Amino acid sequence: MTEILQTAINATSSGGFYALVAIGVALIFSIMRMVNFAHGELIMAGGYLLLVLAGVPLLLAVLIMILAVVLLAVIIERVAIRPVRGANPATLMITSYAISYLMQNLVLLTVGGEPRSVAVSRHLLKPIEIGSLNVRLIDLITIATAILMIGGLSVLSRRSLGGQQMRAAAQDFTMARLCGVRADRIVAVTFGVSGFLAAIAAVLLVAQTGVLNTTMGQTPVLLAFVATVLGGMGSLSGAAVGGFLLGAATILLQTYLPREVADYRDAILFSLVIAVLLVRPNGLIAGRAPVTRV
Image (cartoon, rainbow, N blue to C red; front, side):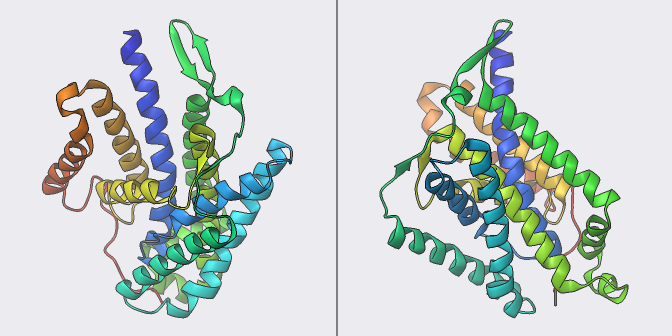
């Protein structure tokens, strides 16, 4: 029973992290119908900002980093995305790839390509005893953060004016504009919220690994994109469910697969995703059909 509970906590922690990243990806898609692959580079930027702010008190450094990543996300939307917002989805996807590679190469030019280490707090990695369980504090923080962010975003989307406008834009962007929703403002706010989620994910990722490199955001965003497809493109709740399921499945396969087939974990994982999509082609919680955003 102890082993099962230990695995369940690890699976929930991993799932919570991927749910956070998946929601950031799904949020942009729900408004723009654009897969923002540059979301991973926002996570990378947050990690390197923590390195730059290494001498600053931790809470202040995290706050400055979050504000900087949110501002960076808004700048990206204003400079690179807004001019091509009315283009076809392929153009938007290529633009997001271009931003991704540009940010990676800017870090290569300024910081270098060698992996860097940064310690957020050693106490977060120390196991704490809960009955017969030894649980890392960072795992509990990740679970609590995921629940808080998902719950908070859900409440804000229903109770605040900005959240209601974002929901209206996600359901019918053209009608929302006819009702007075300002397109530029709502898209900028959406990118800002996505940047906030990327910054939170950066803190959790750096706290868990302590390693920085220019591609650190690529794998989380790739898996988050898969989780978004699994949950249902355009559905924020589907993205959260898909993220939790994908992260949990990763840990469960890693724990319980026989040693002889453990190297094929990812192949088995994606085979399971394909099997689910064969039964539910639109995902577990289908979102609305894609439309063009102008």
